[in-house]
Image (cartoon, rainbow, N blue to C red; front, side, top):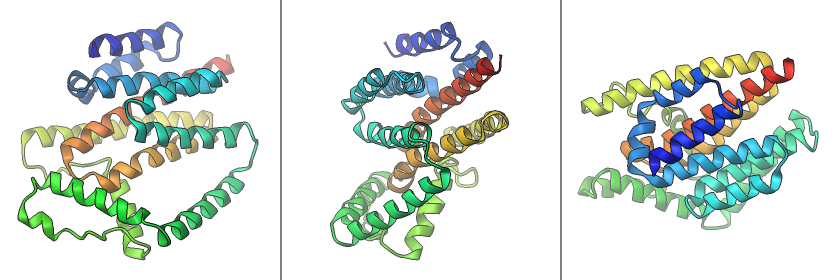
Length: 264
């Protein structure tokens, strides 16, 4: 069923010229796609419906886009919520015709509001509890893991630096100088190759549509940041990361091909 859904999606994308043949081959050569799509039906379903939801959003078929995201809520609510935020940002940028400066001001004000709410609620406490639980899982619940700082994230400079560092390392873990097995070495090399591939196609999109490129980079950061902060286990992190990468690779391919059609 996993393979059927995966190949059906790729055939659908090629059939309607959303991606090119060579782009489909790039997707099919992604090792993690076959590894994790063979193990977790949930991840494959998320990839299918979030990919289609973005296509419907761009085509202004908002009801179908909402329906697809709504179905993802029943499978993986956290990722559906993150994409709801991204789609809301897209509507603000492309339909309300707000300038990029106004959007930046909006996010600054939103950040200040979140900080204020965090100071006067138990949001930070719940976040730290999640981080602690994932760290316990990654450490196999050993005694040393009990020494983990249960108040790791707070309203201070160190926490912001940690968040920034985590958002960067998310794309590279397991770090190549920290690998402990051949499988981790393969995963680390794969991460580097995938990042180079993403950078290459984002650069191509940048030459066509600067605004959309910045939007997609922002969307990638929004989607990955919660996982980067919370998840400690390398295997779990790789499983979450692969679905995000596949969805955004398809979106980038779709945007490149759409812009080429518009030029013609």
